[in-house]
View 1 (cartoon, rainbow, N blue to C red):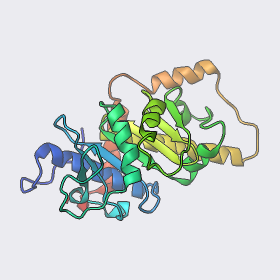
View 2: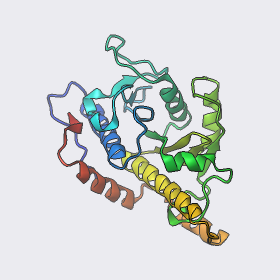
View 3: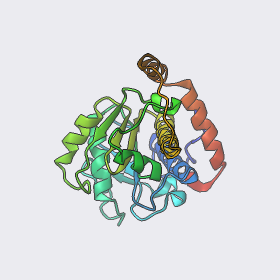
Length: 254
């Protein structure tokens, strides 16, 4: 269930590619709406259908609230635009991260990476994400950690990114930010929203200067299991559809 529908029969893309473009553009717009942006320096990528190494990513230099479906750049596994004559710019560090995750997780269709204040702050804390909120417990035992290695330009870092995310649904990139993966746009968007909220709560709770309460290990594990059904979660589809209504009939599909 989604309302990020293909635009029209006049599109120069296939209906399947067009649908992914609209979903990815919607994620960019929603990240802008919920203030999860860092000017032009973070990215969301999507795997295009067809069984080939075809991906979409934002053109380097556009703000997220500006991005439309037709602006998104198709790139190969090497991160270079498929249309070499398009003149489109792609951030090499940005796609180096995304291409690694896509290569290591073939079931993943969407990868979201953010540099928010709260997410980056938690990435700097030695204990990482604390099990102190329901939002955080939704990532219980399903969150990896990746040590900071500088700007992600080194192709050798790709293997370590793949190893560190493993089969988790998210990754805290130390001294850097957050990353989540999703089999669908709904799953990926809900995961970044929840992880960002968990970080917001943690920073606020620590700022209160009082002793924190943690649920028992049994409750932590139980909540993590509840939040991670094998099939796609109905509530994530509902949340995605509700979030899309914030965009209305805006021009992100253009």
